[in-house]
Amino acid sequence: MTPIDHDNQHGRQQLVDTLRTLVTKGLTSGTSGNVSMRTAAGMIITPTGIAPDQLLPEHIVAMTLDGQMGDDQLTPSSEWRMHADVYHHRPGLEAVVHCHSPYATILACAHKSIPALHYMIAASGSSEIPLATYATFGSQELSDANLEALSSSLACLLANHGQLATGFSLEGALKLAELVEELAHAYWGTLAIGGPELLAREQIDDVMVAFAEYGQQKKRPDLASGNRLNQ
Ligand SMILES: [Zn+2]
Image 1 (cartoon, protein in one colour):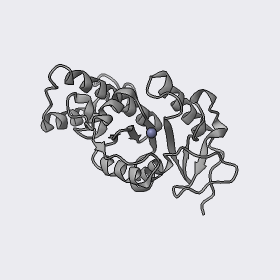
Image 2 (tube, rainbow, N blue to C red; image 1 turned 45 degrees about the vertical axis):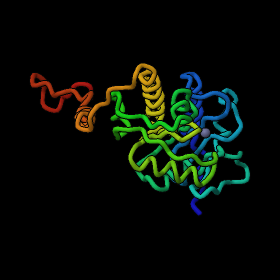
Image 3 (cartoon, rainbow, N blue to C red; image 1 turned 90 degrees about the vertical axis):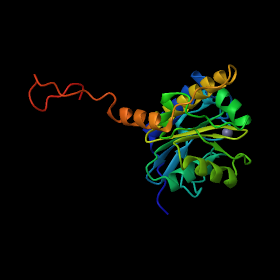
Image 4 (cartoon, protein in one colour; image 1 turned 60 degrees about the vertical axis):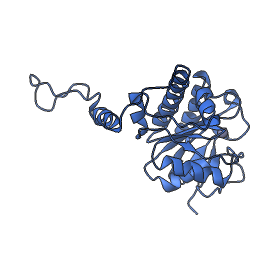
């Protein structure tokens, strides 16, 4: 068995900060949110039953992706399988944020996936935030449903439950969870006034191309070769 990394202090602090950010941004309350990061030995994840304002870096649980951990560890989030299976099956993904953010949960309870009503949905890598079928929290069935939904997107809604966002970094997963909530809010609002006018697949594809170039400064011809702005 690969040794478990107990000393990932920076990563532990990042998870604590991220869970507290979920609270300050109104994306979670109580103890329902959980976040994790991939590590060399598996993952580190927030523990179950500890409120974000009580959470300390030493509470973060280090475990392998098949659920092994040292005796000195707290009990991990009840949703640890959902996190571990993402890392096991999606090698490029480095972080997972799960929460019951209000508008995403409203749509999840109405069994509505989020369609392409706003161009920013392309940041999910898809033209839709899919809906994972319902299964009991913490179950392997829920993790399987989550993976199935994530086969077409970096984020999904979990039926009658909440949302889950992944990322190539913890910051990316947090931003995507925020975006899912914003899109859910917008969709909920449009449903009250007749429903959204949706973007076409080609329009979303154009956004994805534009995202790939967004924020990159063009090289200035009046500057010496190699001296790029904002590098
Ligand atoms: Zn949950």
